[in-house]
Length: 141
Image (cartoon, rainbow, N blue to C red; front, side, top):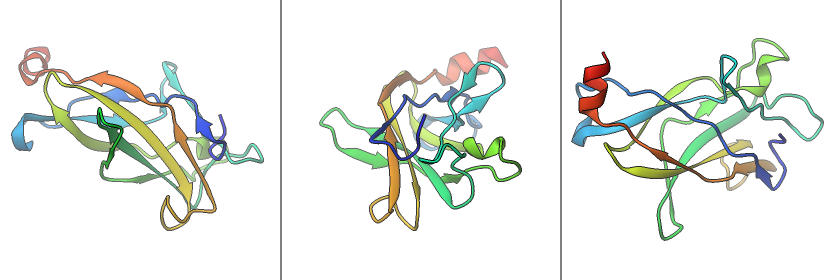
């Protein structure tokens, strides 16, 4: 999985609700991560095969049905604690959509001040995710 090839493999997003209290408009979130235990392992690398690591950033995008995109925040960086960890993003909670809505997400990764001006950049394939209901999350707690 190369960070700077034309298209990255599909991003894997682990669904986890953000705090139910205080989310405006009943919105849901995801924990943005490409490494979760043994279930999710989607490393991102530079052209030389090393991990994205220091200086690389990543962001989730919401892809609308007309193809337009909406940047989701916050952005995140890649881990720098070891060479093995450099392939993986630092976890962040990202606010996404109202409950029961199916959304299409895409990941961007780049080195530089912005994706648009980066000398090296890449995007994942799009994936569709159905956001859980708040009432379902409350019952699960």
